Length: 463
Image (cartoon, rainbow, N blue to C red; front, side, top):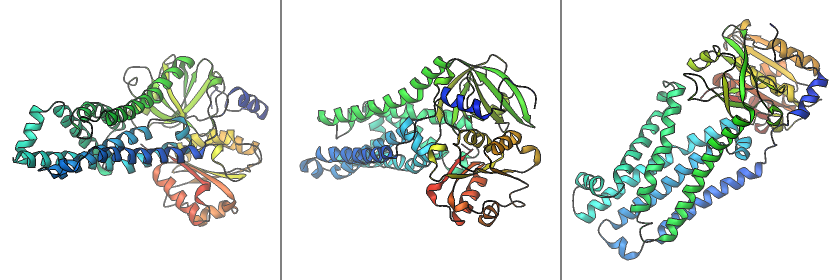
């Protein structure tokens, strides 16, 4: 490897100094996740209860009363769950450290069909209820609602945006979209929620003439908007201004793989643990408007940070062409595949391809006595990225390293194969990072070999 400003050959003494200079990320507090889940469920119950409490027997007995009431409840529940879905991906640090990126996305994808289905049901039931009350046809009433009721046009646009995002979220379609397209499309969800707010307050049967319900709902919306503004925009802006990172070096690690070294101010104040990633926004033409997640491929060496990127798309290809001096904005650090997740003294790290980046920094961050076993998996020899650095870290920690080269069919990571490589596998924590298929295979193999679920930690390198 050519000389670089970022020295990967950090000896033990220097590593200890770095740990003092760069604090690790705070340890997760699992009880916060339970508290947040309880608060979310309690909020849903409260919202529905408020909606029920505002209805009277005389209103329900009117033509279309029951249908409109059902529409009101489905709308309340749907909008509340839509706000919860936004909060889940708001990158709230205490929750993010517990769930990690994979966990947050799983919850987000599990929740997403519910608000869309309930809001669509709300639109149908309310239209039918109003049509029954007016003794008119459903299509005629729909036209009247859009044309004559305040904020109904905005609400219709909001629903159309949500439906579009929902359709694009179907896995078969999502996989055909570029990540940049997917990201921009999801930004419109914020617009859809903003457009629907005035409609809910102005026309919702549970709100008209019920000031308490309006106040509660307004507080819920304001709290959601505040969390998004603080953690998705405010905190990243503060960190970007504080650290003022710039690209100082881009060098080739392997065919199609480069390392980007950045330098900045007060990097020692950036609390980050090995295994975490940061969303990087390179402030240059064509890249400034999008932030992409890349793992730190080593612990910070103030004033330097380093990422290692494989060229698999337009953004990663452009990263390889970054010029010295390019300004960098950051969001993070994120991720829960860290030393905090460890439940056993000893560990095994399984890296697939460019997934080695997260495990390289994790390995550097592990305490003494973890007896690490590292399994590097790649389709070809030249895809064993950072192998020399991994080998040196393993040697320094008196661990063991295995290199598996070949296709997934040629070198299958089955439970039996893992036990051959790591006989005491069931007594270790297993960390796996890499492409989705490889990680899924490793997780399944580890479970079949007796590794408990709580001792398996993974990050899938896919959007």
